[in-house]
Image (cartoon, rainbow, N blue to C red; front, side, top):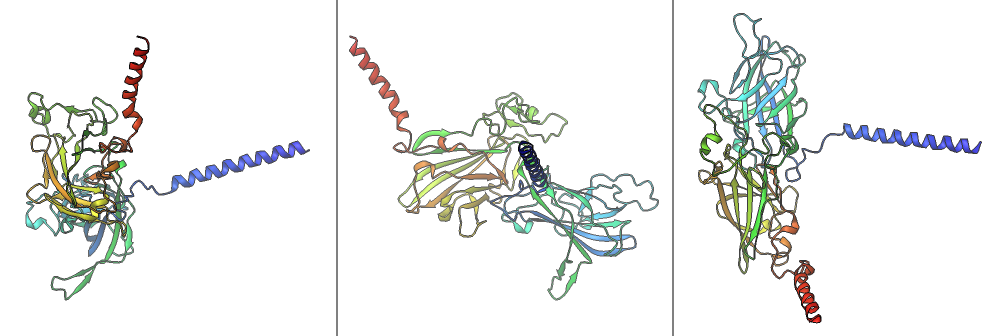
Length: 458
């Protein structure tokens, strides 16, 4: 009886182990994804607020406002597209400051025709220059929203919407579902709409407070993995103390003639005849990325050059080059992690702001262009670059040129993490003893042994 008892015990143990493993896998699959978490901007998100400001005979009028609470990630042209699915059979009677991209089938209506009858409308911002009678505050910027740290006054976008065939009280209104945000492409994941405490508004003279009839919020977070499968920028390095120029890693953003993703292998040689016709074919508007043929195939390259060394200071030069022939970067920004940013003395041609996501740690800086000077990064070509120099004060307790200390730890361009060269490829000091000595002595030892062998046989 003992062998059979042991066999039963082993079988029960295996079943229990498999059950625990299965439950663990199921629980992991139901946990929220952490891909959207950004260590340099842990609280960054886009919050969409719906404020019902008026009831109508068959619905309500609401003001929808998008707040970009991301420190350094903005929404660039051609702008945002907001979509959702109605919970009931709602229609949009009219809009101000925005419009839907498709009206849908409104054939059942006679007389007044709604602005949109689709179950799943898609809304876009109106363009600058829209007539004033179609505008509201914070609208009509072509869908462009600045980042919170760079320009908080323009980090907001709003529109007004009149909804029909909906509830007319707080208890009968149903919040929209399946909210989507494209800015301008994929990358954002939006949570469900949550009813919150009604928003309060203060009058211009600050003597009266009014309140929304009903308010709900939607929070959207960004993930670079959802936005694109491959990186969009890379980093190269050089220094005054070493002739080596460390290029961007090969195939950092894709390889030439690669089929890994659409367009990843599409490039053009700058010496191509009739280059303009290749970039923009006649009669066709194409926003598909078209990059200059390089070993890294990245649309953007950031070059960090350790330029000069003084007694109490040192200087670095930063150059951003655009290799994309079909993209101009307006209101660009760059985030750099470096331990000496706590002693940055001057940024000569870039705006600067310290980012401190964690208390007591000041090693992250946000840099962007000076308005009307270099805040516009042109498409690939002679004008497709911006540059500035940074002057740092030395801290004798930490400063060194050894082991690549003078180079950045991480760089973001327009919110996307750039591919860095491997640390062992960084330019080293010529007399840096930490380099492998064997690699320097090996040729000498080989030559010495060869000569000794020849003389021994003469």
